[in-house]
Image (tube, rainbow, N blue to C red; front, side):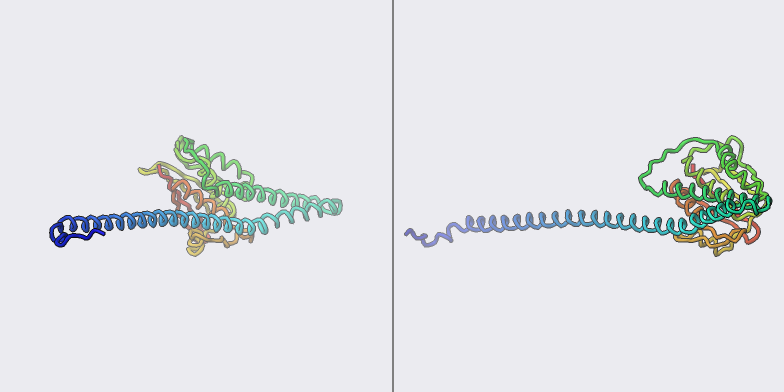
Length: 291
């Protein structure tokens, strides 16, 4: 065995110090690399966790939204669709079984009620389909140019028969030839629902739509001379979760679907609306469409 000579460490201390320093540096670098890898893995894990959390949150929101849609639809279908269908069925059956015993005026009255109920079912079914159609967040829409004055005339023509029955006159005060560049179908559905609401809550008088350009967009106003609303009813409509409970003029209750569709679609096109109303003095809904 060969022994280290006496005085070796004293003679070679610089080399030994360098070796020790090198080992320390190597250990430090190794620790830093290990820590860096651990921190990197932690950041990646955190990013993945946050992404998964967002996905889960989004899925939960979609499920809650779907549950809310189902709940509202079940409520509407169970009352506002089933009840008129039962009425039509029973009235038609009674008319067929007892038509020879009924007077002509009574038969005409029953047929008139059947016709009205059928029209209400048609309008409500259209609304339900419109609402479901625009619940899809991935639905692609494209802006286009359209004549607002002509659109209002087209919607008025849909409700002309109902308006005559209720002694209501439509007034189109939109600026003639007003061309709007917006999402046409959502705007049409919003106006459709505003006119339908006005008809439901107006016994007689005028329903007026006016519209024109402002510096920042298009301002549309829908005014009726109906039973109006209280401040509490307006706040209820403007809240996130609402059910319209004010009775119409024939003591039937609205389902709130019209304003629900209006709110959803106006959010979709980045528009705003304001309701001004007084009980028994009518209602005015103002819509602002950004350019």
